[in-house]
Length: 230
Image (tube, rainbow, N blue to C red; front, side, top):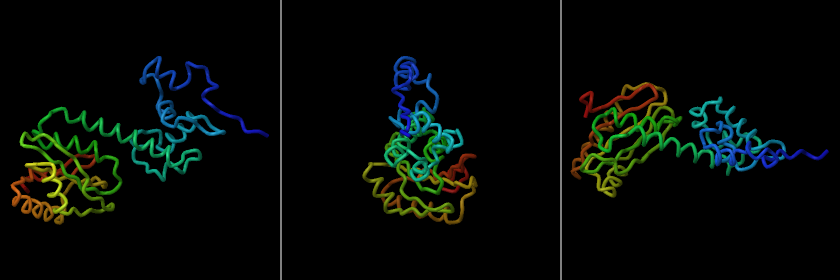
C-alpha cells in the first residue's frame, strides 16, 4: 500500500503556516506552526506541523525546556535530521539573544542587577557550568560577550591568559567575569574566589579593571562586588 503524502501544500491556502503568517502576522500562528516554517517540509508520514508537535512534546510543550535540548536530542525524533535540528537550535539562540538584549535596556552598565539580568538570559539554558566575560569600554558599555570555557555540571576552569588576550583585542578597559551554577546554588566556592583574585591581579598589569564577578542561576545571582569580595 502506497504511503500517504501529508504535504501542507494540500491544505487550504489560509491554513498553511507561511500563508497564514504573510496574511495575518506571526502572532496568529501557534508554536507548532512557527516551528513548521523552520522545518520547511515534513515526511511521507507526517506534515511539518505534526513533526513540530513532536518536537514540542519532547520539550514538554515548553519553549524554555525546548531551548535546553541538544542536536542529538532533537535528532531522535523520526524525520528530524541534523540539518533540521541545527535550524531549530539557531532560531532558539536568536530568540535567546533578543531576550538578553531587551533585558539590558540601559546602554551603560550601572549595577550588578543590570548585568545579571542580561547574563541570566544568555546562560539560562546551559546544562553545564560555563565561564563567560563581558568586555567593556571607557563608557562602561559592553563591547563584547564571550564564553571562554565550558566545564561539567560541577565546575569549569578559566584561563586568565585567554581572557586578557581577548580584552586587549577588544580594547577593553574593564571586564566583568561571570559563570553559571546549573544547580541553582549561588554561594561562591573557594576556587571561585581564588580564580577571581588571580584574574584581577593579572589584569592590573595591563591597566584593565575587573569590575565584578557574577554567579547566575535561574533563582538569582551573586555579585562579588556587592559583597565586597573584589
